[in-house]
Length: 301
Image (cartoon, rainbow, N blue to C red):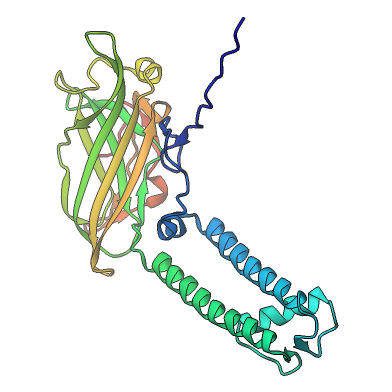
């Protein structure tokens, strides 16, 4: 009986930071050939840990270089790694307290190299921090669930979102997609992304909560679907939005996804806008996800 060698199967890498049920193989989670993208795409806690690790590694390497040549640091205890480490920190920061200093040609060469390294590292970290903090971010509030209810006598998919800033955004464009598992006529399994037609996908002024409406008619990919069939097919809704923020003078983007379990049939959104006797409208952002059974007074905003 012959032994067969099994090739190592690469571990699938999930797509995106959330669990979309999608993954890739043959790609690396972090590509060391593209350190800039890795640095700006890391979550901030991960970025801080990586920068702290790099700083610590640089100091450890230079401290080891100092220890390899005893006597190259004046006023340091011979062979003391702690003295060499703290001298490395002071040199990397170009601080110099006047207590310990290079005492030999070797010490001057190593400390000079460390100063150049420290200046370069500081410049890189400063640049990366600027990029991370200067990126425009949208403050879009999304309802926790999408709903399917009766609207004008027809089954309708509704999604609600709102501008979370006190300023008014302009030229807002929204798109809704649904990811469905399907089988072709030949029996081939595939996942397809379908664009859902919205009654209003563009909003010139985005100030108040926005209700996106998709009528589920015969041409809709959701026609004939219910909660059970959507869950069985692993359906997922994706809502993307672009809007111009006048305070940032740029276009901001955001995205929200709804797995099948967050597509609520037979429910509708409760009112989130209150109008007084003078006709002034006040949006209550705490009610953006509030739902009511279909048939009760709901909201069209």
